[in-house]
Length: 162
Image (cartoon, rainbow, N blue to C red):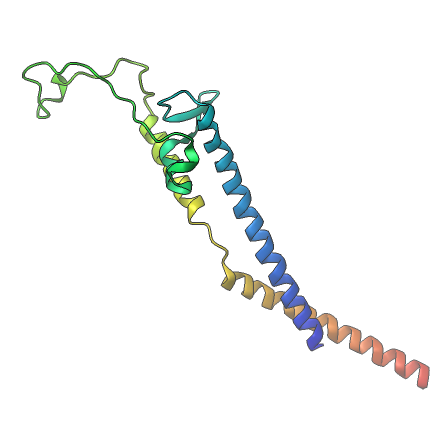
């Protein structure tokens, strides 16, 4: 009975730990694959897009993997327009704006969402306490199974010996 409890609890804990590790590794591999696309991106690229959807930014790759994994050091898009005399931050309309299409309208929202996703992937951990509690519950099933095997054994012994 106790052997069933221990065997079920330990084996389920090992299984849960391994499956958590595999899922974390799979998410990091997907992000790493997208970050490796920067090696083939044109110089100065800040984002990698596919079909108009931003897959990854340089900032996200630098956050999760460090600067070395993005192929080239991160660069920013600069809009070099002459600042007219009398322009000030108190009057935002006087500051020249980038031409339409220079940066997508929702670029900052997309970048913030990707950075949140990168932070989530970077902080993924295996939760041993939750795995242990689930393993303890599964161990109770192992105890019940061991008890059932013991009852069957006793019935067979009784039937054979009389």
